[in-house]
Image (cartoon, rainbow, N blue to C red; front, side):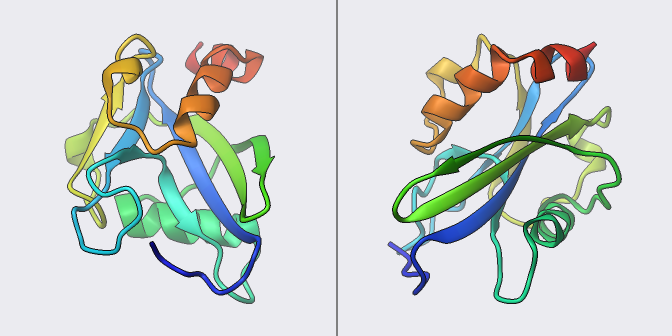
Length: 142
């Protein structure tokens, strides 16, 4: 596992939703030492030293998808002893072939009914059901 050296460390992640109500996920690389290789994850990751959570979100989204994010909303922050996960969401009405694959093996949209069969990073087992059941999800997919 990676050692980020600071505990708790912060991550900033985005759940982009298209007009069909599908959420964009990224299949993580299969590299030695990478946490959760070959697992589906959210777009985004580590907040770097001297960077705000929102700055990290914008940087990570651009690095991983090529998008310059202009509109996004707070969903929730999940806190543990080791990590604080700042989760944002927004509307994304682009096909995955219009995105740049800057990290990971693949990016793909999934319907809520499909995510249960995916090999997800463990945090998504809590985050996705809560997001799909939320008024924020209802609003963003409308």
